[in-house]
Length: 236
Ligand code: 5GP
Image 1 (cartoon, rainbow, N blue to C red):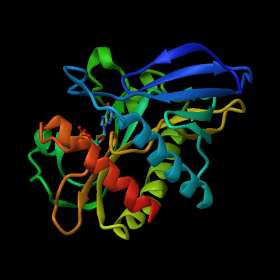
Image 2 (image 1 turned 90 degrees about the vertical axis):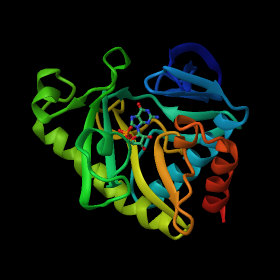
Image 3 (image 1 turned 180 degrees about the horizontal axis):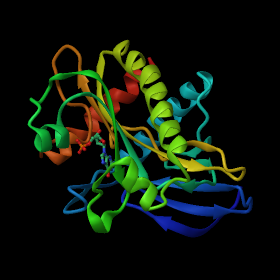
Image 4 (image 1 turned 120 degrees about the vertical axis):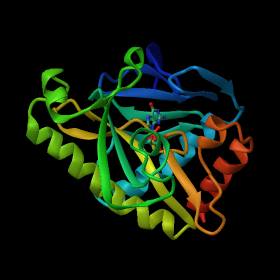
């Protein structure tokens, strides 16, 4: 597999073309950003931890029948992925209120939601990732029709139904997370991006300790130790 030119650089990953037109290489960066890039830092080894955590989760989900762009882990910081056209919608899944949900709607932090909430954010840094309703998604032509929005919601709920008990068994409360989906070369919608403590919130079931990027967002320190602990519990 030959790594060729850079095709995209995001806040946490770089994507490179390869000698296979249907395959890209994702490089997981050590950069940390929050509040739409307003807060920045770097933590050596963070990218490798997210690559390993995502690899394990994509493999586990594949065993449960969930198709993703994951092909293989190449080395510490690189993942081989199917090339997809990313759907510019961040699919947010919430089991417990916190973060922007508590801030925007006044729902107490830590309140267990009566049902799993699935929301859509516009993947658009220039606009600050605003909330979308179904009509916004159709007007912006982010998907082809309403059925695709229902498909995104049902895929996200299905993934939550797998991940939530998986993490519970490892002593972690899966509070919320962000998923991205893309279209493969045949137009099929599959899971993409990464699943890591950068885009999930994990609270330790016993202590309530935050084991995710909120440690950086809230200036708590101990980010790498927390990510290492998440990986350790996944591997055990
Ligand atoms: P909130 O809307 O409360 O800030 O985030 C909800 C969940 O989605 C959290 O687990 C958060 O990590 C994830 N999330 C939301 N937007 C983004 C984003 O732009 N980038 C990343 N990495 N995660 C996000």
